[in-house]
Length: 80
Image (tube, rainbow, N blue to C red; front, side):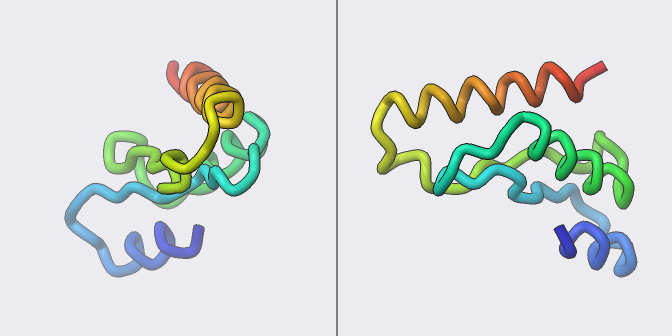
């Protein structure tokens, strides 16, 4: 989460997508919300989006489903 701070200091002109979700383990909704709140302190919600870590592809369905449920819950929590 150091990248959003650096890009803000640099006045990066494009949108960013910080990786806040790592499929190597199952982060809680609270953990993901906390990371998004940290990212939103350095930029506005219209300038960033959530990128999931690329580890989804090799996961089995139960792991994938649990992770996607948390991602969707996080999105519902964060959206007004």
